[in-house]
Length: 458
Image (tube, rainbow, N blue to C red; front, side, top):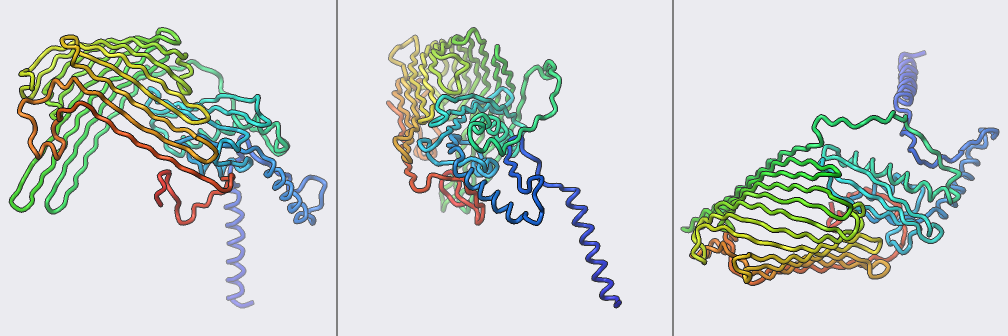
């Protein structure tokens, strides 16, 4: 036997050994808590018929998949590709009217800086009488991958009762994780969450340079009984222009300290208030100190806040203001009392979501100094595949007490460095989309990238 043949044999043995080692070191993906388990080679069948058996099982799988429930995922922040890939035993559709199961996901911020996701599983067609609600909470330190894994586990649990009423039930298994003994929560931070954020940005070109600096400190404590939010922020913006013989430096500064304290009284009532100290060159405010106690009534129970809210908030406040420049009312400082009433409606239903708020406020020393603010958002599906988004706001302004008597220069107007007199402010945004074609959306193909949620290539 030549040395060359011996070398080939040794190389083959090494490769075989390496393959065996890797297969034991990485035995494959973990079985999901809810997963398809087809019996490829049931006990009692000859292994020589494995190809024939595999073909038959694949045919069975295709038949079951064709009869699998159709699911519509109604979630803005979900990783849809990941979920469709992991939940391959259901058929995802792109329109809720085609679905047997509508998964409606809503979220709201938590005191830890994360989010609480409420997943409502709404049955339709053969599941008409079925509905259940599950929750998942994330914290600010979790990565996107950890959050999507947590959401996926909740979706598997929520889909399980529905799948048990289908032929796919025979191919599902359930794993139970190790059960820990219940213990009382002992939090050394007493539910306080602190956050520090710093940001800076530099930019420019031959005739322009810009600098932006920002600071944001916060301390929050949220429990079912109390809600405390404290924050300190500051922003600095500087723009330098040098074009031919023209030079200009424009600076804008804003500082703010804010505090909110809310006490839960019942499922419908809460009371609290704000404190604030701020300054802003844009608004001609050198220093503004404000305190405003408030009371709120929610016509729906607060426990339903992820689906619907109708809140009425009354606030009365005291402001002590010092101005940078003398105002159009010949004031350099003054003490002001005001009050406001805000009505807010928020709804999230299978047909879409809507929110609107109407706020009216005025100063007590002069009722003609008032403001009316209307905000609205509506997103709904008019018919199959066709959806409309509407955003809008309108403010009727009669309370600009801080306008400087000398007005604003052309540079300050163009760069928006000073507030200008106005009777109103408004903005309107309208958009619609129409999708048609195949109702199924199971396939995930990441090749050559894909489109972002805004339609751009990535």
